[in-house]
Image (cartoon, rainbow, N blue to C red; front, top):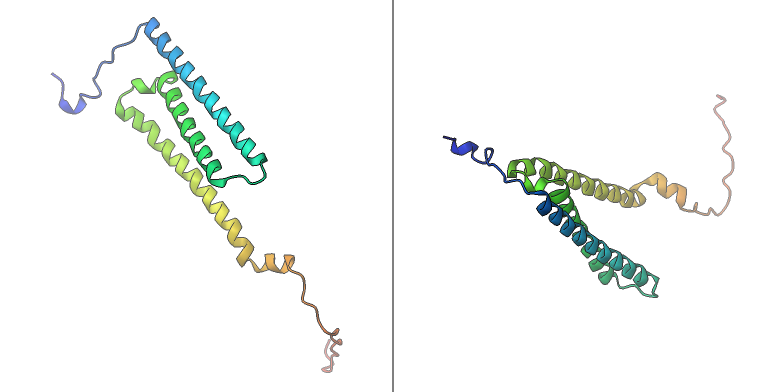
Length: 152
């Protein structure tokens, strides 16, 4: 008799025969190819929009969002089918997915922080301001100050 707490660990997955697995891989490959063709078409559309005289920023942003969503769908199918993660138990999947999501969050946080530093540096850094701003014009040259104290 098995303990209910270990029920998930002791689940016996049925293994697919070769024909079924090949059919699943073929179906996934075709699906990934179709998604890739759609991504390429969207990329060409974005390129064409940027070549125009006044690109529509909202439309380009929507297309880029669609490409991100399609890329995530492709990543899901690759990991699920070709890396066999879809056949694993939930705890194993979470062991891989949660650190991956943290890694993606770190990348986004570092990019945002770097962008913020770049933008703030240009407005608050006095050295940047002194080296890039023209010197103020003076009316006349100041006469050299003589040393009357006798000490050099």
